[in-house]
Length: 183
Ligand code: AMP
Image (cartoon, rainbow, N blue to C red; front, side, top):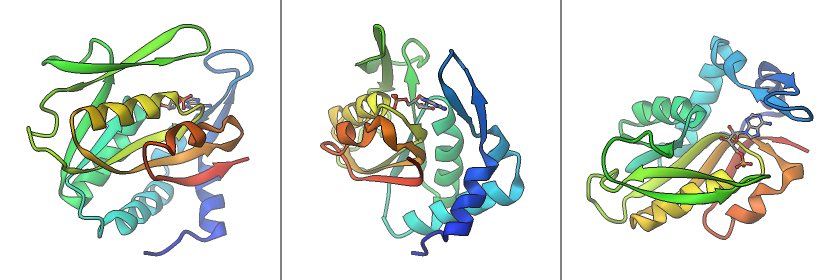
């Protein structure tokens, strides 16, 4: 497995646009649409992910709505394995199980289909999202994967906002790989 060089990481970081005060004042939103529409950046990222995970013998990739779908589905297709969406409450049509997680004010909820992994047990699953901030979303997603009795091999994020310490919450449940770290 080839590590990304510092130059490659800097190139990927520079391809992500910072949008100030979105969706609310004080937040710097990491906009990955400018990575996706940059063919060199998107290809470099997907080649790196394929190279890292090709020998993990994964069975499924689970992606968190909505940007986790983009990277997760693209990687699943490259690895020729299945993709499973984890969605916000009320979006999945079949029977689901759900997990609540705390926001700054109040709660949010994500769901997975009860048969998302085709009724198999202990499949090797990689969880993917674009970004880990406080870790609440990914923690809830990891719990869902475990509730449906699958083997969560690793959780992967394109960007980690280290200062929010989301890793602390998640590392009790799963290995974590963040490609780009922001101090
Ligand atoms: P958290 O549960 O706090 O780790 O938040 C992670 C989720 O919120 C991910 O699905 C991210 O896409 C999104 N998110 C949180 N903060 C940001 C940010 N600063 N820029 C872009 N997306 C973010």
